Amino acid sequence: MIASIEGEIIGFGENSIVVRTGGMGFQVAVPTSLRAGCRIGETISLFTHLVVREDLLALYGFATEAERDFFILLLGVNGVGPRIALSILSILSVDAIRRAVLSEQADLFSRVPGVGKKNAQKILLHLQGKIKGEGIELASGISSADEAVLEALTSLGYSVVEAQMALQSIPKDTPDDVEERLRQALRYFNPRG
Image (cartoon, rainbow, N blue to C red):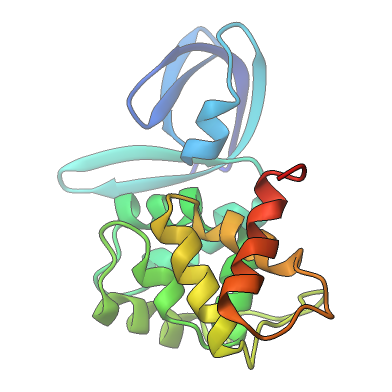
């Protein structure tokens, strides 16, 4: 098992980076947010998981151990392979996944490309009881207005994580009106507007 890798970034693939270490170049699939921040020539250190199958030998890398651990947990869900697990971690942060599981919001997973409602429910059921909520502010009891705002923001092209952060930025004294809450949430993205 290859538990970690450290080396120089020497190239990019569609959803991966190539890391040179020990005279060899390893292609490592990484979340899109991590790949976007990488530059050729930089040194990178990743926590990794090696997936070995009859037709596949692939290395997946993550910035934190928590991300790698969630990747492994997601692989345990029937119907979720490495590509979908990586997509989930590309769109949702570890904290967002914890919040979704602890507040039983399966629909958050179904917003990830390739994850339907059925798989979203499977993911939620699989992760329940395996995730602890220390330090996580639960979004349980999310109002229907906030749910509508979340839906509106994601339909405007914002990621689920960005939409949740915008929701959390809404002042507590804002009325429970969808239009007003959406206006306040949009200010998160354009503070002067």
